Length: 473
Image: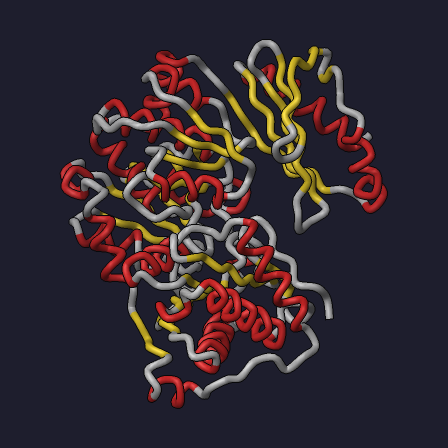
């Protein structure tokens, strides 16, 4: 039996290999022991799952183990988006939440994500404690279970519907009247995931014409990873491009904590641009104030927006937990990652793809301009910045030598002198003209993620080519 290891967003594994019912029961008991050690177990735990295979069964097994430990389980009655579970933790003042999701990973993965009472992703000190407890329990019958009937009779298992509370929260943050008044027809793609009946339902509720695609549950996610990245949503892009009446396309990933945005002409918009546009919109049009936070891999276009408005930006390692901590503290207005994670002050300290999509719809409705026009206007005010991410798959030989390659920092790349190296997460090389390249190895796959940014598309292409050659050499 392999060791339990928590990554940037929980413990993930492949079905029937390491992600098994027995391992799930062990990790659940470790969480129960962690909560009792902290003295917070009496507040109960919210349990949810996305649309993957066996999600409901894993969630029920977890509820039975918690009930056996005397901890109340609030069990979601259907597959539920990650941000909805985060809000439910806060609404109930629960001790935390356990969510079965592998987010945008392929269908044969599942994951267990623990969130503490803050509602955000657990910080390393928490996951390290749970991981240590779980690995000490492996191979033992270390838990006691109640049946579902026993748990319900004892008041330790309660079925819940968190949707109404989440809808009420979003009505306080989004100008639905402006969206409805714009006359926009909006296409919505939940990618067969847990976001079904959330984004589309809220838009229809306020009177918006909605066109949906892939809005039924499919644990195979249509044969693609449930990630609303350009390469996985070609059918959605074609729909928006082929329908002149559609003014905006909005997609969410498998657990609806990430977003994908398509302009009315069918152009896919990089999350880096969406983050900067929304920050500018919140400051300029909604007259809010506050600093921003971004991960080290995220475009510094948001830094240019902050400087333009007299605000600051906090740079964090990759992992939304670090941004969530700043949201919980109330020290930033918006936080986001290039991988399409975003939230704002006054909301949950976790990624929310539904919120992000609704903010984009509001921005387009209020500004009465397309995203392409809004981006060109932003570039005119703060300077043009272009960014891209490449996922470079490593052969076994390249993977074996990758760590040694990074051990010797580069002095130049693409013929440009490197003026600063940042190693907060991966290896980020900065150049004098403001461009940069970041190499970051995936924690779950033989893949190096290469992030690059420059002031022109030609220079960006040059940096990407040089970075790819360096990785493959």
